[in-house]
Image 1 (tube, rainbow, N blue to C red):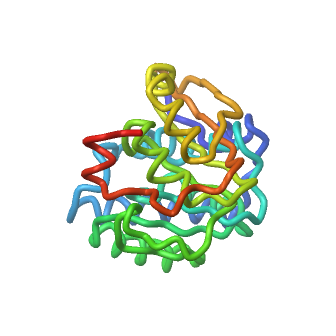
Image 2 (cartoon, rainbow, N blue to C red):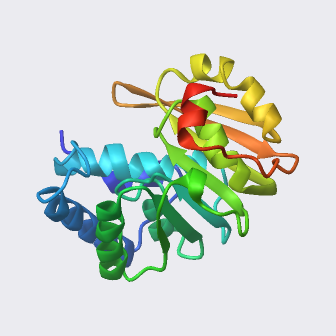
Image 3 (tube, one colour):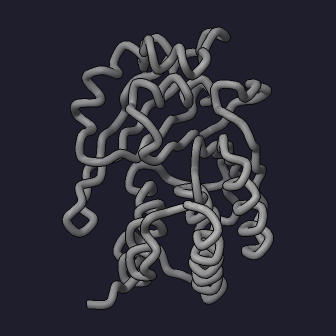
Amino acid sequence: MKYNFEESVSNIGITLTQKQKQQFEIYYETLVEWNNKMNLTTIIEKDDVYKKHFFDSICLIKAQKITNQTLLDVGSGAGFPSIPLKIIYPELKITIIDALKKRITFLEDLVSKLDIEAELIHGRAEEYKRKHCFDLVTARAVANLNMLCELCIPFVKVGGVFIAMKGPKLEEELKTSTEAIRVLGGKINNKIEYQLDDDKRSIVVIDKLHKTSPKYPRRFNQIKSSPL
């Protein structure tokens, strides 16, 4: 049965405008075009892209109200979850950091075609200088949670939140992340689980309560070899 994207977003309280429908169509076409030149995603069938990338990204609102906050998306790959959220919430101010220059080049072409604003940074999160912090920091299935916490929580402003979008093993990852969350100044606020067809998805919301020591994040090889 054909997937109904409009119905899915309607079920979580969103009514798409004609412009937004067109933007998601442009997003899909641009993703497929670039995926022929480089590996952005293994999911390319249209219904699957709309469901497993676009809708799943928007499901972040199950955990966090989106307004005109500043959002840093760490290792977003093809722009998930930040660009679908930006399409739905145009006032959201997004910054994307990704280590692969080719992905940033794709994102530059994409945001131009979508006619949206986004700050795009080529680099690694652990090497990104903390000039300022963000209301929201997101990461979608980039790495194990204890590593993600060190890569992301330092960039959350006190009073802001880190939102990690994960798969079915969240509880296991949380057990090994408790100390990292504490050391970095965070506290678990909420955990949400939901189904996307047969796939179990989960979201963890971590509040930033205290400033993070300037020694974090460490270099990636240190984070990987000696997690907090």
